[in-house]
Image 1 (cartoon, helix red, strand yellow):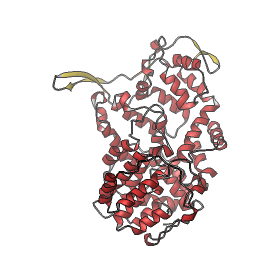
Image 2 (tube, rainbow, N blue to C red):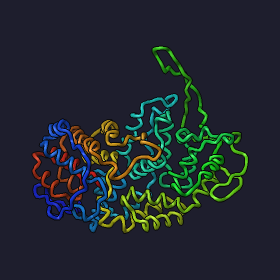
Image 3 (cartoon, rainbow, N blue to C red):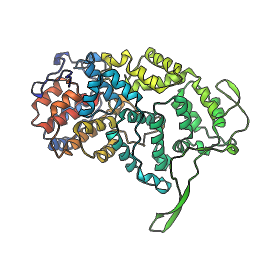
Image 4 (cartoon, rainbow, N blue to C red):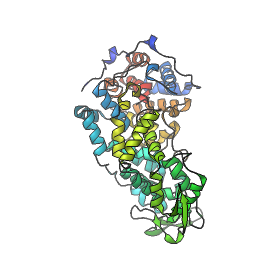
Length: 501
């Protein structure tokens, strides 16, 4: 395998001397507690001081950073390093075999495969047939995590998570895990299609119909929730529409209802009091249905035009606004390239997106082939989300059946799948790092290493394959002084370098 600069672990060095370090931004932090540090130290065989040092360093990655404010040097002049960066940002990390194949193919062929391969369908979730969708969300979370870990099309899962955070809903308000399951299937299938098709799917998705109340909206009593979020969060952004536009599009969008079930089942919902309910049962996935009798009859004035308007017409007018391409392009850049993209870069991406008639393959290809993606300033400029961090760690270690551990650890780090904090979705980049979430990341690294009952992969692979062989002086020193392979893997996974992508 091509080596982007990683010597053996007994001779590891950083690519910049300590005296060249730039002071890290001050972070308000309580640090890691003594109890947590001791637990980590006992489980991994490393000293308490090492755990505290790693935790403190992880907290320092929060906040704006530039290439000159790090104590490592970008290796992106090497194609192998560019391939690894591409995989880290598109695939939740990788196994050794996946990395070997991608390095052999090279950057361009790997990119073609990621973008052009049709998403692999996950295995059917048996619980989805439960009447009323009344089954634990943990089953749904573990089902998705299992697919993230085993799918032959990991980019599809990364894009599914991206759209899950953009077209936001949560299982609590939806109150039907079958609907939430269907939504996940929809986001995957539409992830690399075109924005117009996506918006129609989003509008008629049963979980979204509940989450943003469109299923309750009628022409006589329009509900404005979906109308507002369609413009503010999903497409145009705040400041590009008026309150009149919200009211008028709410009228035009009215009439959608949840799908009719195939049957009903009587289910005991309170055994102690023998309370039963008739709950809907579905034989397969369905979209919302349009009821013309509930729709608005009349003319509306929306985004500067007047006349009769239906759902397709609303979406067409939204897509005609330049702000729509800019919002999507900016969000994609923040998730896949840099936390603070320049206005010129976003404009270039948005222009290409509009010219392609909002084709997502065109957008993503423009992102990953842009000079900004391979620029030195892009290297380790993004913080892994909790899901990315945990799935990459599990793949690197080869942990068997880690989905329960991953699903149970996400909430402490700020990301519980299917349960974003609000309609804005999850935060991003440095927002993932705080004194509390750092503790949880260190604890996860401890638990993941502890789950390995068989021999660990070579710790040299951890450095070469997952950290590009590029370490800070501090991490290199800790790694070289570690007592055994278990401690070395813990240091690699808990290091600031592994938190970044």
